[in-house]
Length: 255
Image (cartoon, rainbow, N blue to C red; front, side):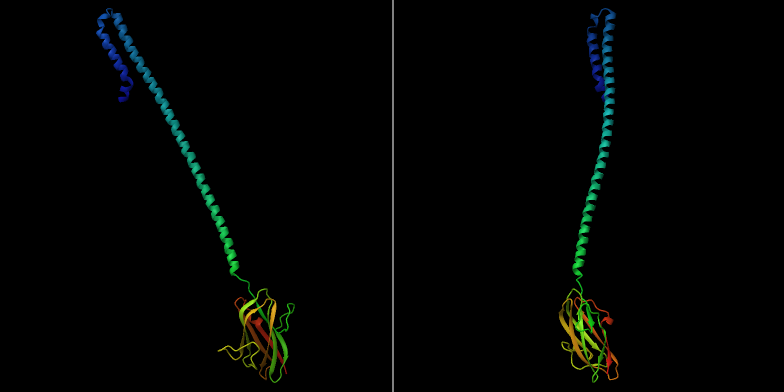
């Protein structure tokens, strides 16, 4: 209602005022024709003004609707493009994060392998042989024929390190048969307190790589024996434990 008053009220007021002034001068228009013509002109001008405002408002409303529609479409298109751009940024961040994590994972894996390699130190292996002296080309000798005099057999044997790594801080354990006895403690061997009579120990700080250490021992064997066994077990802080059969020596006795 207010919109109608604002749009068409001025024309109605102007027409009314003009008619009022016309009425005041009504007697000046003595002929009816002039009076009718004046009233018709006033009303025609009012109607033309109202129609002009009416069609102008229609055109303006159409233009506003079109502009609003275009604005709405532009807004929708803007948000659509904005969403696409936002998704691209999110995908890019995910790619960057994934790539960064992969690089960190690869770096950690490399560090882990390096740590494992550092923790797994090279090992040394000590082996028993009757061969004295011993060279790298010689095979291990674990069976010999030795003479017996007064039930005593003399042994010469070696412990060898054929690896590239020194054997560190260890001991050798020489064990003879249960019915055998050591005539004397073998040189550099000793009896450990609490150990059995058939066992003697040799402690060492190192046995260098590609070297051998030679020992000897005199053993009293039973008079009925035609053979006997000895064992030379080894252990150290960086040694691989040998199989028992690799530490066994078989002695065939001749009388």
